[in-house]
Length: 68
Image 1 (cartoon, one colour):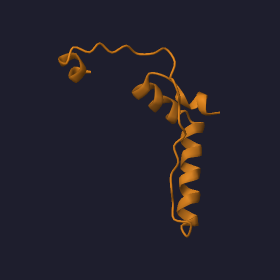
Image 2: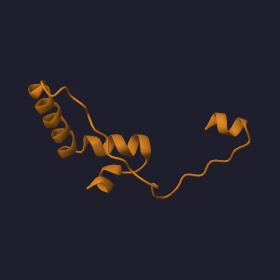
Image 3: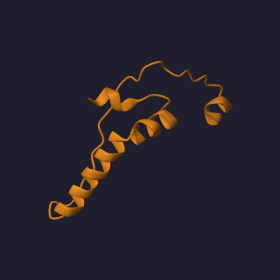
Image 4: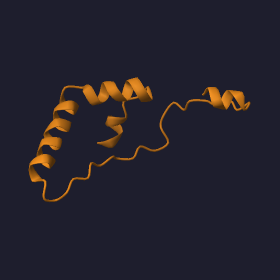
Protein backbone atom coordinates (compact mmCIF):
# COMPACT_ATOMS: atom_id res chain seq x y z
CA UNK A 1 0.00 0.00 0.00
CA UNK A 2 2.87 2.37 0.60
CA UNK A 3 3.57 2.60 -3.15
CA UNK A 4 -0.05 3.42 -3.91
CA UNK A 5 -0.16 6.06 -1.18
CA UNK A 6 2.98 7.69 -2.56
CA UNK A 7 1.22 7.98 -5.92
CA UNK A 8 -1.90 9.46 -4.37
CA UNK A 9 -4.05 6.38 -4.99
CA UNK A 10 -6.51 5.44 -2.26
CA UNK A 11 -7.05 1.68 -1.94
CA UNK A 12 -10.23 0.27 -0.46
CA UNK A 13 -10.58 -3.37 0.59
CA UNK A 14 -13.71 -5.13 -0.67
CA UNK A 15 -15.89 -6.99 1.81
CA UNK A 16 -16.02 -10.07 -0.44
CA UNK A 17 -13.54 -11.24 -3.07
CA UNK A 18 -14.46 -10.61 -6.69
CA UNK A 19 -13.29 -14.08 -7.71
CA UNK A 20 -11.31 -16.90 -6.14
CA UNK A 21 -9.35 -19.15 -8.49
CA UNK A 22 -8.36 -22.67 -7.57
CA UNK A 23 -4.64 -23.38 -7.40
CA UNK A 24 -3.18 -26.61 -8.73
CA UNK A 25 0.12 -28.34 -8.03
CA UNK A 26 1.58 -29.88 -11.17
CA UNK A 27 3.59 -33.05 -10.72
CA UNK A 28 5.26 -35.21 -13.35
CA UNK A 29 2.89 -38.07 -14.16
CA UNK A 30 5.67 -40.55 -13.36
CA UNK A 31 5.87 -39.21 -9.78
CA UNK A 32 2.87 -41.10 -8.38
CA UNK A 33 4.32 -41.32 -4.87
CA UNK A 34 5.08 -37.58 -4.73
CA UNK A 35 1.59 -36.70 -6.03
CA UNK A 36 -0.01 -38.92 -3.37
CA UNK A 37 2.13 -37.35 -0.62
CA UNK A 38 1.21 -33.83 -1.74
CA UNK A 39 -2.49 -34.74 -1.84
CA UNK A 40 -2.33 -36.25 1.64
CA UNK A 41 -0.47 -33.23 3.04
CA UNK A 42 -3.00 -30.81 1.55
CA UNK A 43 -5.89 -32.89 2.92
CA UNK A 44 -4.32 -32.82 6.38
CA UNK A 45 -3.70 -29.05 6.22
CA UNK A 46 -7.31 -28.47 5.22
CA UNK A 47 -8.69 -30.86 7.83
CA UNK A 48 -6.76 -29.36 10.75
CA UNK A 49 -7.62 -25.78 9.77
CA UNK A 50 -4.12 -24.70 8.76
CA UNK A 51 -5.17 -23.61 5.25
CA UNK A 52 -8.00 -21.55 6.77
CA UNK A 53 -5.57 -19.87 9.20
CA UNK A 54 -3.16 -19.05 6.36
CA UNK A 55 -5.98 -17.53 4.31
CA UNK A 56 -7.19 -15.40 7.19
CA UNK A 57 -3.65 -14.24 7.98
CA UNK A 58 -2.80 -13.19 4.42
CA UNK A 59 -6.19 -12.43 2.83
CA UNK A 60 -8.25 -11.48 5.91
CA UNK A 61 -10.87 -13.95 4.70
CA UNK A 62 -11.38 -17.72 4.57
CA UNK A 63 -11.16 -18.19 0.82
CA UNK A 64 -11.23 -21.99 1.18
CA UNK A 65 -14.99 -21.87 1.85
CA UNK A 66 -15.51 -20.23 -1.54
CA UNK A 67 -13.85 -23.12 -3.39
CA UNK A 68 -16.26 -25.81 -2.20
